[in-house]
Length: 91
Image (cartoon, rainbow, N blue to C red; front, top):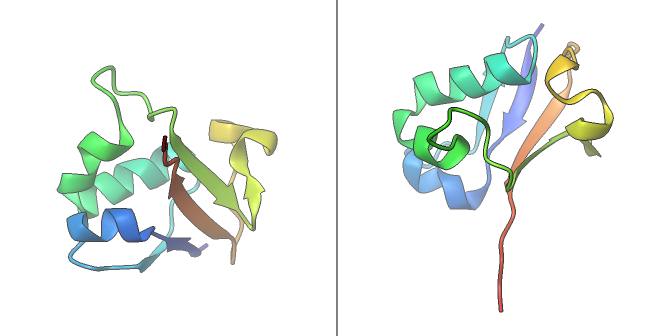
């Protein structure tokens, strides 16, 4: 069940400019683990020292915030499009 994962420009320096991958991850924890495995430099940007996904990293499935779909319990479906979006703060 492949899902399309789109990575933001801010992460592309850690992915050798890869902007999109296809993943067979069943859920969000598996996807994050796969991203870290493919792109080890992303780990520090995806997870805090406690091993949890950083609060400012948002995941959208088919343009809907995954938190409203069940977050880590949501099971990806064939053809889902997952956007990884880091929040950007400014002043």
